[in-house]
Image 1 (cartoon, one colour):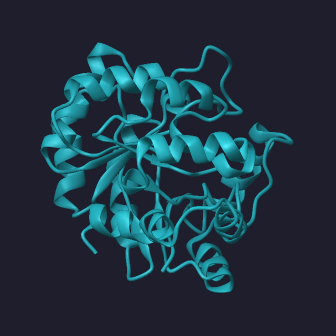
Image 2 (cartoon, rainbow, N blue to C red):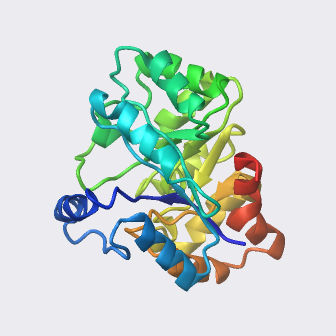
Amino acid sequence: MIIDFHAHIFTDALAPKAREVLIKNAGDAYTHCTDMTKSGLVAYMDAHGIDKSVVLPIVTKQHQTVTINEWAKSICDDRIISFGSIFPHTDDYKRDIDLVCSLGLKGIKLHPEYQGFDVDDKKMLPIYEYALNKGLIIVWHAGYDPIGTPPYRSNPKMFAYVADRMQGGVLVAAHLGGQEQWEDVEKYLAGKKNVWLDTSMASKFCPKDLFVDIVRKHGADRVLFASDSPWSEAGVEVERLRTYGFTQEEQELIFHRNAEKLLGL
């Protein structure tokens, strides 16, 4: 069983334009492996042995909130589990989080660079707390992004600050806690008990020994396999991680058991 905890798709109508814009923004930083539609993602999953994918949409404008979350609900099936999203600068975060909950979505995705907020902004803390108290998983983009410029709006120290102020809940820092910030992940974030790390893009860029050290320090029971499809190939990342010397128990936790536990599967 392989569960990819981090994938991106768009509606069939929007996918071609979104693909064009995102490829332009990424430049030579990343390649892409699907056409960014649901059918394209499922075809890739079928070809490479991925059983389920968690899709992470992002609301970048207030008026998108209902449309994107209702679409997220509509694409869920036995292979695709979509989270929702809210706009961080919303005029009513409780209303928007309640909408996500009413649709039966299991979590929300937030992206500091695309949505224009700092992860540790004190104004965000009540939003996080309300979502977590409602039982939602929060997934954040973490670290470098091609559209951003240093200093990035998220880093391991910021996530540690947030984690220390949340009582319980599931906080997921993508990209092994901070894309291209992995030394600081090991220093500040690894070991935080209410934080899960997803592996998206990390095995592709993080040095192998540092990757393994972070996983072992943090605990394989709080690491989630993820690809960031279409920007990285889940099948390739699975095979790479199988060469990293993790025990069978650690691999099962990372590849599916942790995700199954969080998602109630």
